[in-house]
Structures are given as C-alpha cells and as structure tokens.
Length: 65
Image (cartoon, rainbow, N blue to C red):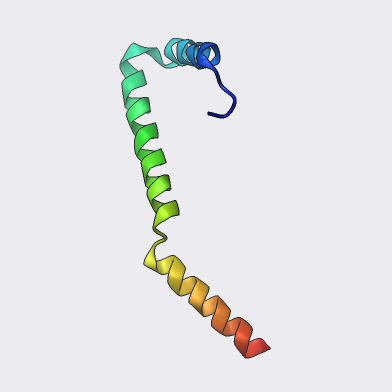
C-alpha cells in the first residue's frame, strides 16, 4: 500500500491523533472512507454524463475529419 509498512502507518496515526484529537479522528476516518468508496465506484462504473461527453467528442472528431 504505497510502500507504507506498519511502523509508518502507526506514525501517521499518532500524528493524526495529535493534530485532530480523539473526538475528531473517527469523523475524519469516516469521511475519508466515503470519499474513497465513491471514487472507486466512479472508476468502475462511469456515469452516464461521461459516456455522453465521450460520444459527443467522438462525433465531433469524425465530423472534422
């Protein structure tokens, strides 16, 4: 995972705990998880708007040629 081992991950956790405090840390973890989940879903299933944009661009390229 990005070249991080257990000691590095633990150090990042301790620094985050010192910066944000124990009350705010679960909220930040939850928000990060939701963000990563949404990003992963979009990468696996592109939205319909993106498909329309790609179709429009390919039609424009064919018309110019």
